[in-house]
Image: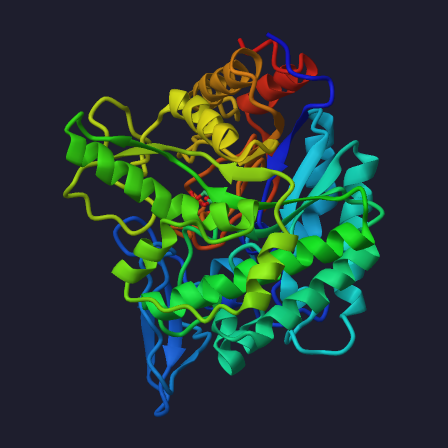
Length: 485
Ligand code: BGP
């Protein structure tokens, strides 16, 4: 039951969920900087102002966001709390955090670069040197601590100027801005980084915060997604030319999807729903729009503007590996209403405090599904348990529930590799140190091996502390997955 000696073990983060320092180092505003906190009952929202100066909120949940009406502009209003502004201050704590990761034995670290730290507005001729220096030092630090970088070029965000001025990815012009940004990263970090992800979870995001589009309708969304497909393919092609050893992926929000019953209608619907989400990775991994997408787009009344040149671009820039997040699974029946990802609750599975079904076998299921489908190496770039952690009287955090979750998932991951023959490059656990939740904006939904002293409103000392799971994971990595007990 052995993983290969070159297997990569590490953690994964996103800039706006951990960095903070939102106006430091010459950084421009990012779409996430307008997003308030929230919780399960009160979703996160973007604050925006109308022409008379009145402030409103638009739900910015990445599954089903609300639009920002014409003539209104996103704004920052002092009555609200915006988690990305401070996050967990990784901007000033990265040396300490990376040291703790290195000490744990990690040999890879996934992080995203904040686009407006490099191009504050997105349209400048020259990049912001201070932003480049920040990431350069961070990369050098992780290499010194024994980790190789895995860079997400664009994690659900963009410079807000591109959103305000060009309506984000709905404009083809943003492809050029993205490519200029990629070229800068490849020139500067290409000799230190092998693995790159062009985007994060295109199959789950929509609307202003992630795509920079003010409208959220299907026509706007799928055209914007098409522009992301082109940007990804062009970046892959350029990356291969500039860095022959490089390998490119895109992060796909997985989650296993099962038919709710053995009724043929449920099974057929579940296959169709699965395709609606796999569509995003199908185009980027295979290099063309699959035949079923004609019907998928027709049902949504979407007519895409795709040229022959676009089709050629998609073919020439396919991904080298398929990377994905896996947290949960869901079921689908003929009557299920779902918005791309999601589905109904499986009565056979336990749930987390945030209602996510816990399904370790589902990880083995999707690993097999993706390897069969794409025949490309895979990379699990997010997995983990969001839970409330309590500090006991001895000042420790005994997060056995997290250890159980990870152990069960890692066991199935190893089964998929060793028994089923899936080719897997590595595993990066989501949020190795506690950070802000993407979906709810809370701090109390913690994933980390390392506790960060901070609450939902940003109060706390920001000090870091190892949880029990840190010691457990260290043993797992040391034994290359053989010691899971
Ligand atoms: C993924 C995102 C991450 C992350 C994770 C956990 O979809 O790529 O950014 O946050 O989900 O989700 P949450 O933070 O909502 O618990």
